[in-house]
Amino acid sequence: MLQRKRIYGELAIGAIAAMCLVTMAYGGSATLKENVYDVGALKPIDSVPKLQVGDKAPEFTLPAVSGKTVALAQYRDTKNVVISFVPAAWTPVCSEQWPGYNIAKPIFDQYDAQLIGITVDNVPTLYAWTHQMGGLWFPALSDFWPHGAVADQYGILRSDGTSERALFVIDKQGIIRYIDVHDINKRPPLDDLVRELEELKK
Amino acid sequence: MKKRVLLFVALAVCLVALNGVLVAAEESTITGTVLAPIKLPVPQDPTAKNYLGLTEEGSFALSQIKAQVVMIEIFNMYCNNCQREAPRVNELYQLMNKDPKLKGKIKMIGIGVGNTPLEVEVFKKTYKVAFPLFPDADYAIHKICGEVRTPYFIGVKIKTDGSLRVFYTKEGGFQDPAQFLKIIVALSGL
Image (cartoon, rainbow over all chains, first blue to last red; front, side):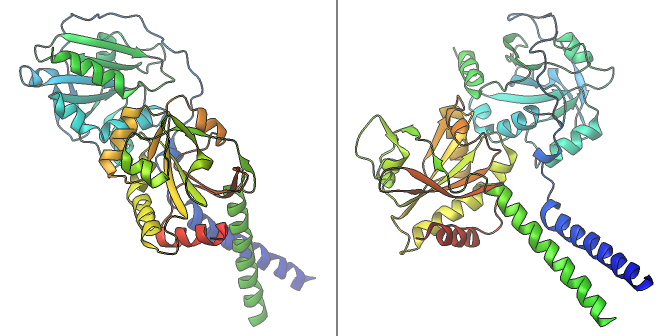
């Protein structure tokens, strides 16, 4: 009886060991996608606009993942600026939008534009998220505290504390030339942005 | 004692093997089925057009590709995993072309799901993709392929009646392009 119990015990240990091996073999390579939290379908837009094309872009200075701070004013007279607000780290759509921009640098360069990414997450969260993307060529800024203050200034802070999925194109004089407060559930096509950057040349 | 150790090892090996079968089964959910017809625009680029063996303009059915086997990569320009996989996929394509036994028998295409032509072009330029890529901006082809996660690989055999029989599917990347090609060749019967 005792011996049978021992055999069952060994079988159980064997099973656990095998499962550990399996987990190491198949689940060891956690990828960005596997860590994304599915938020489901959300209200497409949940904010009231405060800005319009032709307005002066509100100034801001925010901490970046790099440990430095980035101010909108530092690009005045030298670069057009594209601000990509995304709702939150580790959520669907957002986790693809910036990796897409990450391979489109030549397009931004072509239009003398600096891309800036902003979320309402804190710096460590943004760091982990962008690190798993393999790093980004553009600054990722944290609008965490005062929470969503810049998103609020830009009229895109949602009622749950996240921001809209929004794009702002700002010319070298600091004037807003394009606003796309996009359906939060969908990714804006790159084509729209390129068309608006092309407009800056005219 | 020796017997118990052997029992322990045997059980562990069996469970690992069983799990391997289950994983393979999960990756091959549509294997053996016939893929619904897919129409694509004939590439403007003469090299791509020539590679696919197309002579007409306008659109073409996948079954018109001059090959016995077609590997389809379902990707997305925005997908981080697809970007990371791109160099290995390029290597796979090179291996297919280098092998004199396979030349002309197996062709490869990519479908950029949810991507506009511009977005596909950005991906193509960034990773110097030499095989033809097609946009699927409205996700129509993605639906036909079962709305799979990207990257995803589908191996189809072109039957004499023009139907496309799926002989292999794989979700996610592959570690070794040469090994992956061996699997494709073995399963396709080329």
